[in-house]
Image 1: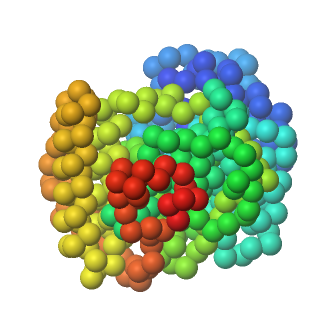
Image 2: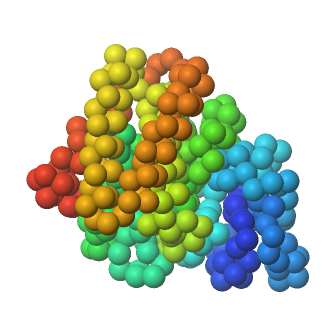
Length: 330
């Protein structure tokens, strides 16, 4: 199998210097690319002088995560794409278990490794942990992370299992599937585009897997910190747009109505916590959603799976029942 490890970069020269060496050391069977989103720092100079074996793809603009990868991958002829954030440290033998699964499981299209926190390696990392799911209203959560509660890795998720979505922080996909799905949705710009892509893959009969045999460490928040209102805006807007694209027709209106109400409660909660900018971000996300709604409704495809959610309401379990651990909720 021909494997391309593709790292999307925007003004991340220091991250490249810190984390590229581990990828070069532990991925001898892969071709390494850095797709640069029109950085204004010295990223290109650093790559040319310090990492001459890395191939550089220069995008014309900062396209964000979704279009940035779409532009970078459109002319790459490989069997497997490994999309890796610039703030990921990989470990020895991280590629082999994943490539074995692709070889042995023809219906498996997307795979995620175990993602631990680079800053605190005993714990899972927010963006992906041990594989992702959504509830009926589109709120994402992970084995090992529900909302802001992150579990310690005590080998409780050592089973190779089917998941609903794989984290974009370290995302393996068959190239033929990526292109058949026309890649990520450019309109998302960043955040939750990988969930949308995974949902569309499932709608077409593909499987998504998690394996603990491959381990990586993620810094997280290197581009947008978790508490950044812009991140709140993108997450809330894109989640709603994803529902419009992928919900079964019979569930579209009732689920969207209840989801909008739940978002309103989230906005009120931010106010009580003294975070009015996040409340404003949710309002802005809703206005943007209404504006984009006609365009996204036209993107709907057939064969939407009715069993897309792991639990009815993760919000209810987490905030009302106070169940903060994945195993307790499901």
